[in-house]
Length: 85
Image (cartoon, rainbow, N blue to C red; front, side, top):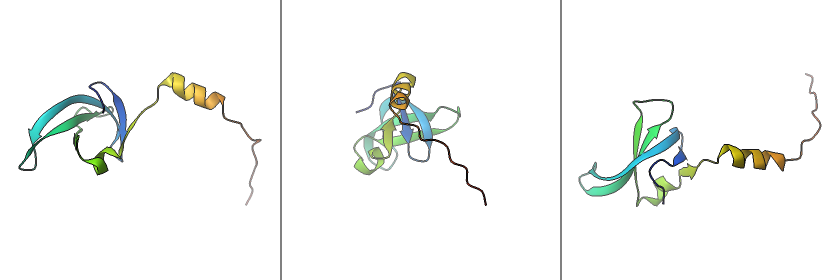
């Protein structure tokens, strides 16, 4: 379960912040949704049903800078190769 202010990657929509978890009637039936606001656009908002497994499978937590630096530090870097055509 995600919380308000979590930063997530949502499918092709991109990097978003969870701004709310609220009940809405978007399909003729009231259900709970994550409200995602795209980080690079003030006008882009996406509603993801909290009980829709297929939609939730497209939603992933974004690692912090510290976590990314830690992952990079464990990578082995191969010597660069040059390909000429």
